[in-house]
Length: 330
Ligand code: G3H
Ligand code: 13P
Ligand code: ZN
Image (cartoon, rainbow, N blue to C red; front, side, top):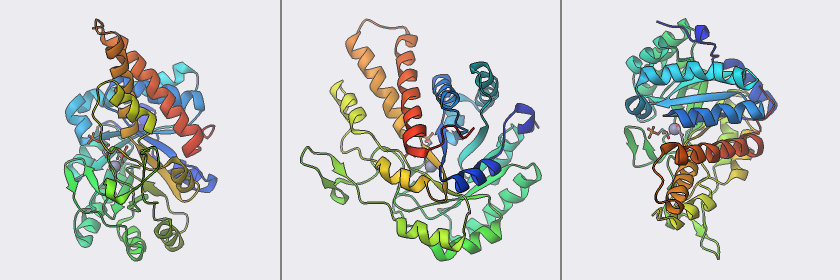
């Protein structure tokens, strides 16, 4: 067992308290490889933003859990080397069992999500409480979820979404002891968050999704004032990235995300953690496609992964400065 404090990591408790009071959100960026981690840390150091490094079950399978853990440990030293020791949380994204959460905590994670949202309410309470009991012994913070997002949640495919029911939140928070709560107010995972028929279209063909349910968020805030709220599925799916990918041979159809002005509004409220993964995937893919299309003879991975990393870093800086408001909060 290695404790996260030995690795120089922090849990999310104090970061969330400050973010709720300050009206901004901490970025939660997923990583699966070296270039993503370099982009995240350099963007956050340059903007002086705290950060949550998220590891999904898929990332653990892809990259090897031990390697990811050492990469995160390296990230703490890398930030110092870049000149500023930002607070770094290492977080399990969409944990689906107590065993998985335990294993991550034993490897040095400082925060875990237990996603029981697809279970019936009582089962969700039970599994979430069991994770909280274990995690709090080690001062590891726990994120629970109420309500189901549409789209793909790791191994769990939610065909049908349902919004969080505000009347459940007080009871859930009290019974489970969670430190933060992910809610469903209209966001969803992936690059195709809405069906075209759910959207309107601008004259130049851009899909405009239905607005987030801020009325539900406000009702939740009224019932659990100041409690840290988390938004998953918060990529914006920038039109210029989708167009760039498609112009270099990609085939992304009807991709649509959450407009950034809505995320800014959410970040100013009790939403203090905003999860972004798909936008980063789009930024990397756009850069790689461009390099390879323009330089078909190129075969050195650094020549396309380097520009992908640069594009990713710029995207993250934009999110931190213009969307989440977490710049200079480290
Ligand atoms: O919420 C899911 C995250 O985007 C992680 O995706 O399961 O493909 O790693 P993944
Ligand atoms: P996006 O697919 O919208 O980036 O959401 C990521 C996420 O919620 C990770 O948990
Ligand atoms: Zn998610």
